Image 1 (cartoon, helix red, strand yellow):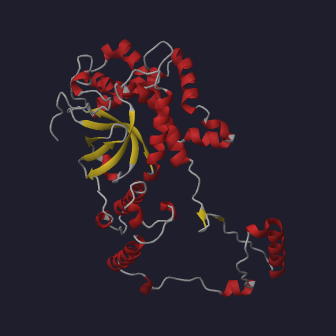
Image 2 (cartoon, helix red, strand yellow; image 1 turned 45 degrees about the horizontal axis):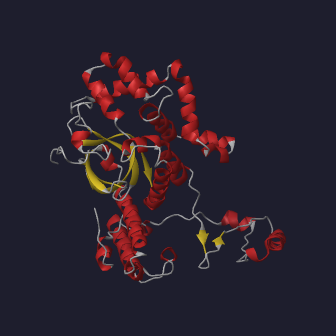
Image 3 (cartoon, one colour; image 1 turned 90 degrees about the vertical axis):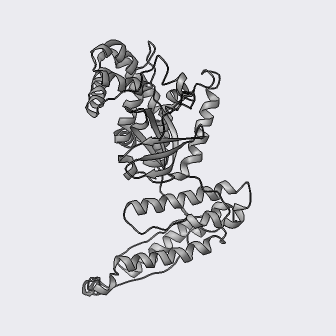
Length: 399
């Protein structure tokens, strides 16, 4: 990657030109810090944040961070939500880098003003970089193994290339995340902090939420000050993570008529009790339930039935199993293009791709499928390549 030009957008995501942001006189020039300096700087900052003088600010921050999120939960659910490691880390990062204090500024700014002179140069440079950081929404466009990621800033609709090694073994194409991108020790954008990872299908919900927050704060923040906006709503990314990931309800099966499907199995110790149970259920639920079948087996038969053991010939070699899976996927997805889908309002993917209004839904479906396939590949399982489908549907494939 080439050096960042003075007139290029700043990689920190502020929306300003590089020369007017991280290259400005009030920001530190790119300089090296070691992993040890980074870790010691964070440890010192977190100790400072636990000082008694900040007790009131911390209590107010907890109320702001959790908001009304806990009101709809039972005490046990609230404890579980607050005990998630992502919740604990997310809160403390937001507290020290983003949350405004009662007397003005943030904890990291107050720490640097009071104790900055006693820090090593690398420690101070790192904290100055993080002081400017904020969470932003990104879509992973490409993963360069052990090198870095190509990200699309979903708010600014601009691409940023970051240097990263560990995340290239954990993230896949089309992943959606909220992350802090800072100018690293060598002057290149890097990821720092603990990002929130979301399902690909959560992209539009996240953007709708951010737009709504932007409209509600429109008259309260300086125009074009994206950094201030994202710092002020940083806790929203945690709310979205709880909703889309940690506390996401299980999927619901529906019929073609969009009626919810629930499979109920009643087990009893006799056929007579099974018949009585069936009668009670049908009397209570009426037309909402439909009887399917009754099966019975004597205790003696159950005890005599040998446990089924897999035969050696049941296990296909990995190469053969992969070929079988690929052949199945090929038949299924070739036919899928011309099958009406509820997700496309009854249109086929081919029909929807030709309609401007429905095209975004098709693209979202393809990204979701490719994302799942890429994760299977990352985990060493057989995965299908959907690349051909974009051309078949006449869609441009970004990334």
